Length: 247
Image (cartoon, rainbow, N blue to C red):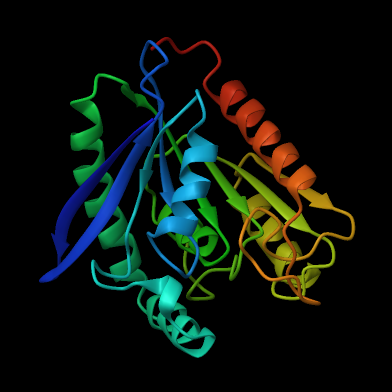
């Protein structure tokens, strides 16, 4: 597995993302822009990047919080404040995401493993909200996948939905962070916009079921079986999206 740190700047601030891929597998594969949860780029989310990459993707893990963020050592209140600050600034989220993709894709292209004609995007928790907002702004990704998404609805209620790709949302029916009315609103939005979308609702699952290190609480719980199933569904969804395209 190769892991390459990539630095970039946006609006005068420094950021540091990661390229993650299995270099023991021959041939180019789709790139997947990953928006991690509120902890940003760090050891815990890097575990997810390795798992989601597998043998199938070159993962480009974006940093929207800053090179010195160190989310794993922040309090819940500090993490919440960081999410609120980003959610209140959609132009920053989309602009920084574009910058991250360009820098990370350039680094990934040097490995010979990345096929940029096949582009997917995935987000976890708060990162799922950022991925959806980036897609709403018209970012050119053929597939968007969100895991136990936080804030799935538009930053601005009247924002147009200009999604260019398909959407798969993987969510838990017992998720109090993002309850059913919010997911229903997302489905209504995607339907009105003519987006090809799918939602898989796991019965009884709580928030963060793909977060290996999340504490077990009434709101959150890691579930290894559901996470494996989620990644299987994601891989099938992306393969279907890219069916007929050659690397």
